[in-house]
Amino acid sequence: MGISFDRIYDFAWPDFRVYNGQDLSRYLLWSLGLFVPLFAYYAAVAVVLVNATETWVALAYAPHLATIAFVGVFVSLLGTRAGGCVLEIVALVSFKLSFWQLFLGGDVLQVLIAALFLWYSTNLARACFALANERYNAHW
Image (cartoon, rainbow, N blue to C red; front, side, top):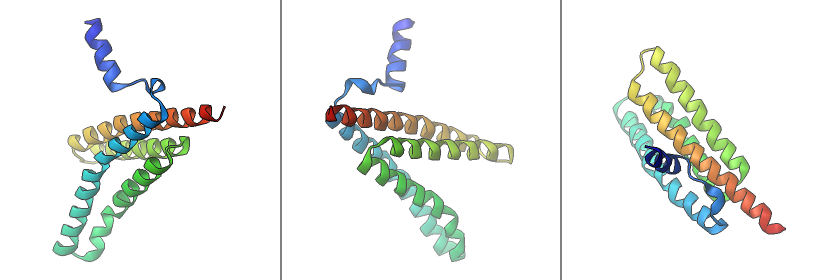
């Protein structure tokens, strides 16, 4: 039981301190590739809304698109502590909003997706912090 728990824990919360800067950069770039389907989904929904209803209704997804694009570019290009903080703040705010929407008649699936995004963003933020530490220690 203890060994399987340790394996699950190592998968869910990997220790990024053992990787070098190149591995961390590669991990961040590959991981941010998961944002591409999410970005495509929101963009497709916005396009469908523009074609099906009034144009201004599609602006409801503009914050989602802008957030995903901004976070993806900011974290992948910079890989700094600030990038990790921005990513984690965005994930936490989206989780809180989806959680409160649940009380207003929202869907449980939306909360679960937001929780997965929070977990994923936390791991990416930890990778950003480890990369920033690696770059800082390389100067010495």
